[in-house]
Image (cartoon, rainbow, N blue to C red; front, side, top):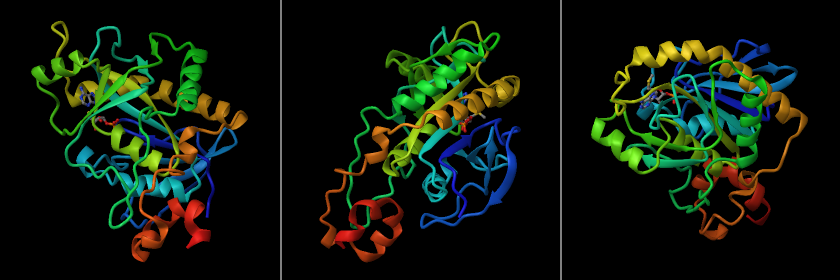
Length: 294
Ligand SMILES: CSC[C@H]1O[C@H](OP(=O)(O)O)[C@H](O)[C@@H]1O
Ligand SMILES: Nc1ncnc2[nH]cnc12
């Protein structure tokens, strides 16, 4: 099996990494079904990475249809310890303008139809999620963005990502509500990913690419798909430069994240009560702690 410690999930407008070398397409199955598509494994500046387009390469999956569990499980199978998510977001604050980059440190969950856990079916676990983003990985992203001095791009190195269900964009009333809650940006995908990555003990951070002002700003048009993709196309080259720089930093200075031991005290069910079939589904996550005692 191919091994890549760094994973990249590309969102709307980022369906491939142009700088990848020695590329191999890997099709994986998981106990949680099929991922969004095949993983593209290759080298970025000599470092092995695994890339996945979360909506599929032809963008055929709605946010609510993305097989988040399979995607994260697939990354885990490939050996990923650090996961970078690149995502299009609307801005909820005037200072975060289209084409800016935000590295959020918090989430607000407004999803309704997502399965955001690997657990259940007889094995109960509760991970800590107070700090949902890995601070060191977020710092790597921020350092990379700052070091590139990208023209016209302001870095916002913290912020709250509101994750809505979609697929319709928000109403003005909702957008203003999220602003009053302190939301910085809004998207439809990153929260289930972050929760599942934490359960899989993978450090996760988001590179949020601002594409629009959602619908709250009196001086800007309401968000449309055309606006999102137009701005992302302008910024996709910069986003790939940021990811490349981050991967180089990470390869030179790997670190231990709190995410890497998230399950140590999370499981409540005694191991002798684990249903065998459920344990088998979760063995990639749980063997590290329980295999010898079972
Ligand atoms: C194309 S606009 C809405 C769409 O874009 C964002 O996707 P991603 O997070 O995968 O970049 C947003 O979350 C919606 O899924
Ligand atoms: N305004 C917005 N709302 C939700 N998701 C988005 N992705 C990009 N812009 C968005």
